[in-house]
Length: 143
Image (cartoon, rainbow, N blue to C red):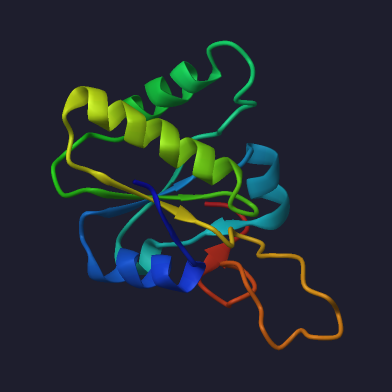
C-alpha cells in the first residue's frame, strides 16, 4: 500500500535511510522553471523519470521501463515519488507498487502528498507552508 507522507517526512527518511530513493516525476520543463530537490549534501541523486498522461496507451509501461532502467530493485528499498502537488506522483507510486507485487519485490513506495510546490495557500494564512520548496528543503534550479 502506497503511504502518503509530507515533504519534511520525506526529507527525514531520505536523510536517515540509505535505501531511500527520491524519484521526481515532473517534466523537464518544470525542473528548469521551478527547480528540483537537491540531495547532494546527503550523497544522493534525485532521479528524474517523467510521468506522462496515464490515460494514453502504453504510458504506464513506458514509465515502468524508465523506472527499471534507472533503478535497481532490492529488498528493503524505499521509493519516494514527488511531483508538483502529489497527484502524478501518487499514480507513479501505485504503478510501481503494482509491478512489485507481480515481481515479488519487497520495496516500499511513498507518495509525497504536498509535492515540490505545496498546496495552494490563501494569502491570508501564509504561516503554514507546504511543499518541498516552500518548506525550505534543499533544492536547486538545475542538477
